Amino acid sequence: MARRDPVKLRVANQKAYLWDLNDVQYLRVQHHICGVLSGTLPQVTQQNVFLGLPLVLMPEEVVLLVRNGIAVLVDDRAAHLPPTVEQAESYHASRAAAVQAQQETHYANEQTKKREMEELHRDKIEKRRREKEAARRKREKEELERRRAAGEDVSRESVGGSAGGQQEMKISVPPLAPGAANTGPPSSVGAASSSSAVPVPAAAEATDTRPDLSHVGYTIIIEPRSDSFAWYDPDRPSVSFSTLEAARDAGLWSYPQTTLQEARCRVFEDLWRRGFYMGGGMRFGGDFLVYPGDPLRYHSHFTLTVLSTPTTTIMPLDLVAYGRLATAVKKAHLLGCWDVKAEAAAYASLEWAAFG
Image (cartoon, rainbow, N blue to C red; front, side):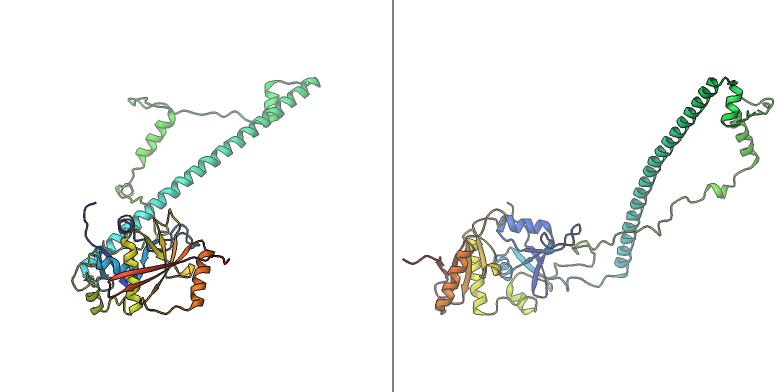
């Protein structure tokens, strides 16, 4: 894979975040860095089993990435400059356009649903009308048969009069004016004459027929990334740091500070270079979990506890606890330390075994 620019780790309150999905995929696939997703999924907000962006990195992962030139630390707060008047106006205009587009789409969808419901109810009304008409004709037929059986007069006029007393409707058609073309039924002629008699003002024809969208709701979209903002500049030397020392001098990043923290970073990197995936081990009584492959495909083989030095004292009760706990969760407990003189990591594996 072609070498790419260092990944930007947005730092806030001594925590490093990844907001770009491409960066998350790149670090996981190419560099075995998993992190922990901590963002709420918009479609399923009432749960915390499946989470989304941002990705929070462990301090040891951040140190590893920066020391190996894979990532840089960005002071995300300082990278946001005060916007100019033109930038602010452009931003608000784009937001207003996005809101209007949402409202128009929502209004169009509502109108479509409304027409569909009208069509649905129109079919029901028409069906009900046909049912009533069929019932009326059935009653007329039964009445006709009853009167025939009784020997009564069943002429068409008497049946029609008894059924509804309907009267004949006469329609008078005005004579065609001399020289006029007979291009349609009489109703069209009357409509044409009435429309010509009452002219439509030009102002009425030019009336704006756009719908009123002030009552239509919309969703407020919060951009997870600031890269699209004109006033966001994460590449300035004063906010982007390629070394831990520079970030520490700027007050942005302070890990590692102690001997134990440095040992954790060194042991973490040593196992990472051996091809293992690393994850947090708090739930299993250790500092890290050691996976032979991607945690989405494999269970961890080891629970790792890091000691500050090779001469650190371990109480026998702690050894028993490490062994029994690891065996209970079907893992081996790994003790690791960093030897400063030898510039190498050392490990010891514990497994609980029965006596006798």
